[in-house]
Length: 241
Image 1 (cartoon, rainbow, N blue to C red):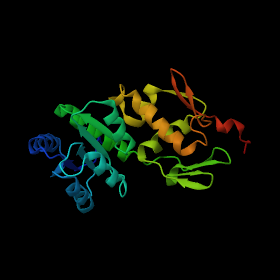
Image 2: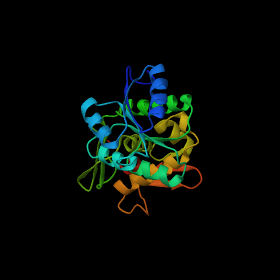
Image 3: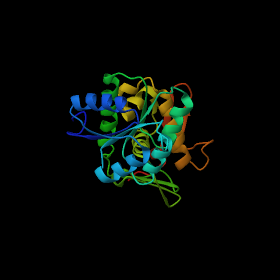
Image 4: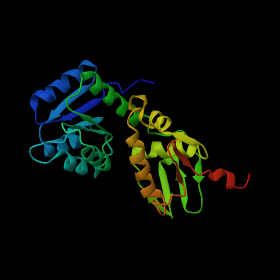
């Protein structure tokens, strides 16, 4: 499988023209097609007009900040978004991920890190389609159809983001078994993210908020303290065919 789509198109949103040019030159060197926007609202229009494969979005923009731009993007598109920030504070990173960012890069960053992160996010986006066509009935409350990318809770369709689908998929496919933080990071995000364990905790919380009746007392996604997470072994309680 190729590391990224051939001729992937990337929108760079940064009001610093020198930074935008630095990013564009390095990405073009690795075969990406790149175009730029220097304002948040221009970026929204560019996404609608050109349908890029990925957006690199700076947090500090002169008209609308990057968090608000991301919120607007998520109203109409699941396009992968990597946030660019000069601030390394945990709160900024968490806020971006909570709004639907797929990753973040803290300035300053090297060309190698930039390209690696872009490739990893595109790879995850390309592999977001799941292989199982089985409709899984965990219990009377939760039903999952990975083939159609649908999750039903109490008869209502629940919308999951692509990363949430991948995380749920790997948890369910290994139901009853503990997946460590490292295993989850490798399967869902890629080996480049082996030191980003907070991603796992954050997205586990997202999933629990969407599928658990009481997220504070989960019955589907169980914590194995200090090790990782385990999806309830629902198959053990189902009658044999």
